[in-house]
Length: 189
Length: 378
Image (cartoon, rainbow over the protein chains, first blue to last red):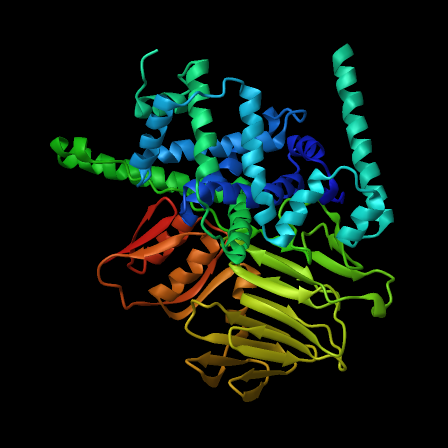
């Protein structure tokens, strides 16, 4: 089995498209913590947050075939959670507080017009929570963000043998190559 | 541009009916709002629990329930029976009183399929693997022990050529959700059948002079004999110690008694400083801190593992607790609860409504709403 922990989000997205549940589980483990902390900011209700995150991941699984692996999985999840939160704002107990805040923003503030800048800001806001995660969750998240680790370093951090890591990385490269070849053929025929 | 109404804007945003500027407005506000929100403390444990429980729930939801042909036929049969029943009732009402027909709603019972082999495995580093749909072959290597999934779904632990000195204590946990069960073989060759809504924590390899594992819920063990390393199962206030035998431990926290049933060999049961040794066909029951030994029919205790519910003078609540775990449903009671007792053996591989139909021959009244079975007074 490939080691999913050391795969990039893009590699995981490729596997997710192939209905690989391990990849799905790894994405879940990678993002659950920070999404939870983000949701907690505006919604201090454990049950509702769990329901929101459940829906977001069910949505990700059901839409896996439509995912473009070149797209950013993190951004995909973050915007999904944002929309779920906005939806929750409409119905929750402190609905009035949210609406008043939005109204005063409409009256007094200038929105950020550039969509890509807004997305970057959303990523930044959500990912500031990484440092506050329980140590294990933080490690899982940070490992996935650090592309510069050598196989030896990854192995040390994960306490598995270098040989296995190399094999696993090679395996995933092979799969990627295979995929490229396949789409290449599709292109020509 | 006139000032917009916040409620209207939010509603339209969620309906996807906004201009580019309006979209920017809502999203910018959300950024600003989240940035300034105060985050209360979150307990690390709470977060980890939510993550783990959430994964089980999630995997249970995205897994289609596997159906074999026999089940499908049963399903068709059940469907037909339902159709005939509805037709009969409608027919009867048509013939008896035409005015009433408009108010009669068709009787519809949602399907509640039986449980299946379903579990997640948590490795020593906290990462998890859904065992249900994992392909056969090597699943992982955890601290020098290879974990494999066999063609029949069972997972096995095999030590690599690492010397025992290098081995560290690494624990794995297998968790079955409600509606799931699983089988595994530990690194010493001990076979374990894990019932639904249960978990088993064990070292990937047994170091030192004992073999110790923790159980919550129910499991059946066939312990590999090793005179020099006693095998201990710790569960819900008791410890079972054996050298190598076949036995069943039922230690669900929502059951009134913890029951240990012996099929072969001999076991010692320790609880509250008292030790009892039992022989085959005997069962230790621990209830409210006191221990008793009773003679039992062992087929009753392990019926679950062989695909049956086995009831013997069980009251309705005890029956329903078993159904709740296997069909992943909640149970609600309305009105006075029947004092009737149930005895008998029923297959676990049938839809809940089918099983309830059999039980209702014994005069219980029920209704299924989503994932809740409501027991009504007669």
